[in-house]
Image 1 (cartoon, helix red, strand yellow):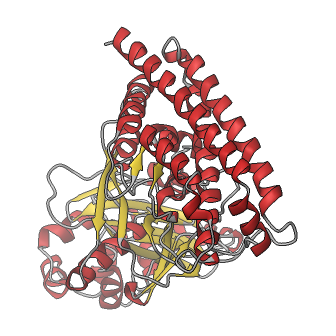
Image 2: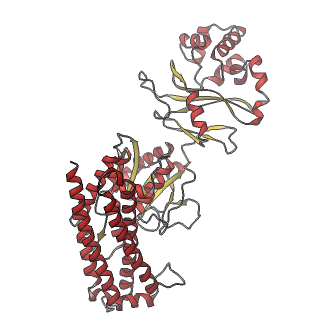
Image 3: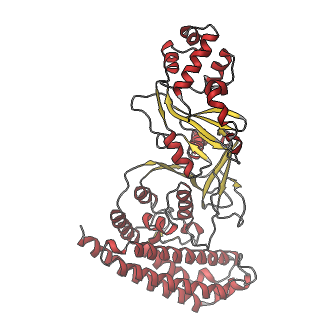
Length: 504
């Protein structure tokens, strides 16, 4: 640990040996004589940006300035074992606080980066200007100082023997896991949000994100049979309830013009510098949600995780400027688990009865129109106007919707089961959703065995397309299943109304 009084005495001794008055040293450094007096009296440490200049004026190294020989000699051998933090301060000028206790706490977690903000290092109420985190550490090469302005970050070297100011031109958040379908996170929005939150050490599971947002109750259908119907935000706002539930400011940017891109690019960079991943849609291949995990060339290049990455692959370079971007803002008041459950059930009721929006049927109406489409023979008969590729597309959309619906109802059951003790009747709701999930999953399994090429499940085979299009019985079975699920969800909605009414 650095001894400020010993450093002050060393500074005064070296100044006098050079024949300098405190006023003359202050003048050459561009500071006030009072500042020099406070340094020499051990009240505070000179700002790290001044240390090299002070050492040069006094004709010594920074090591000698900060660790006088009688203090520095015994620790020379210790440095060979790695990095030893000697001092840590946050603030500016007279308002510098000793934050070694904070650094010891953060070192416990073995973080690779230290993000300098007022959450990690609280600011003094009397300071309006820029503040700095100043660290002094010892390693095998000697004593070093590094200063980081608020809003930026410090990074440890791979062997944790050095600390550097993280460059703004490039930034990469390490070890964000892969996104993938059929791995228990088939809602791309919730999957991206869950992994981003987990990176920020907020331990929300995918199922909790689905439940808190209400996306576990969603169902959309568009009669042109488009994959976008599976997007959680295509017709209903599930983002607002999610961010309220997790206690985060919701910052959303939609369809940013090219004129505004520089400002938005800077906001993406600042979020990543704070250690907060950014979620966005249409980063690679097709419009699905993913995570912006880093950038290079001052934000001219984005790196990301998407649902189109190869399993186990590294971050991929984003191909597109996203048309929707969502940021995790600062912390807000977080509701209780009970309040979040009631809010989630409120979203359930709103989702069931939501009207058609932007061409997408929602909730109970989506169930109905999906079944109507399955039984519309004109959509499944090959003709000059209805080509095999059109039927193939509908079959792929149908299979994708089944996947997402089953995943959503599985999450509804899991979230409600987890919170069943908070309200009477919630266990019955969880059991109902579990039944819907199991029946949907079982039908989807049989359909895939009937329709998909067993040798390559990635693509629909022409034979399977023709089989589904011609198999009215199979399509009718699915339509009947959807009608059953719709009636079960009507019952669920009625139970939810009674549960909420009893606790208003």
